[in-house]
Image (cartoon, rainbow, N blue to C red):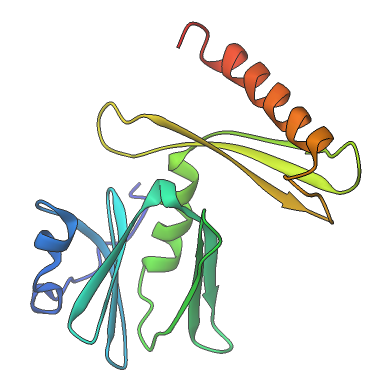
Length: 169
């Protein structure tokens, strides 16, 4: 059973995508709205607006999703940048988005901050061959990564996770 129904891809909407991706990109899902095209490839999410492409490798996308009530698709980068587009035809992109973000997540752990709040420690990897691991921390509930006790707890837990999941790497 296929994970996704094949969506007919209008390749004319993807002019310039291969150049933006830095090589041939296989479009797995495509969504459209007024003046925008949002595509998911094996390795990246890409948005064309005003004739220009912007690309986010899946490991740089921290999350997001489709809001059918408002017709908006939103996502956030691991750097905290927020993006939103209005889509009239979401097609299979919301399902592919969820699957690709999950596929690029290698390890995820939530710890309590010693001061207050929580910190999620996440390890991501690109979906191409032999991609490096990228670790990052996301504070919530008032946790402050600049606080020395919180920073020490994050470093200690990240070191523990590295040793548990990737010994000798």
